[in-house]
Image (cartoon, rainbow, N blue to C red; front, side, top):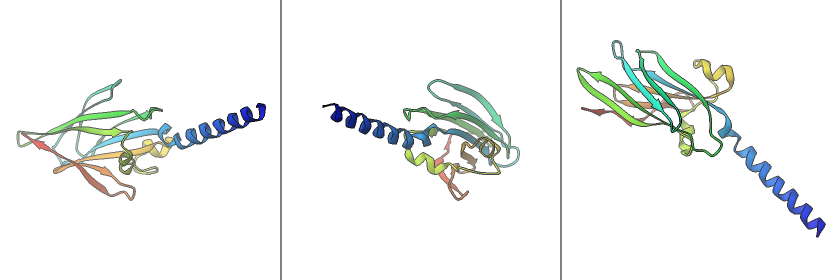
Length: 156
C-alpha cells in the first residue's frame, strides 16, 4: 500500500510539473503596441481596458505608438479591448475589438518574440504584440514582421 501511495504521489508530481512548464508561455510579459499609420495630420485616439484596469484615453500622432505591458494571467483570462477612432474628413471612423485575448491561441500569431524596433520587447524579453491602424483597418504583426489585416473600420 505504501509503494502505491509513493507511485501515485510521483505521478501527480510529474503531471503538475509538466502542466506548469507548458503553461509558462502564458506567464510571460506581454507588451502591446498600437501604432498610428494613418498618415500625416491624422490623430488616432485609443481607449483600452481590461476587466480590472482602465488604461485611459490617449491620442497617438502619426508614426507614433501607444504601448503598455502586463503579465499574463495564470488562468488564461486576460483580455484587453480597445475603442480606437479617428476622423476622416469630419466622419467618425472607429473599431471596438479585442487587442489581446489570452484564451485565443491565434492571438500569438499577432506577436513576435524578439525585435530591435520595439524597445519594450528587446529590453525585458517580453512578447511584442503590434497593432497598426491604417486607412483600411487594424493590422496585427505576424512572425516574419509583415502585417495582416484583422479588423475593418466602421464609418459613420
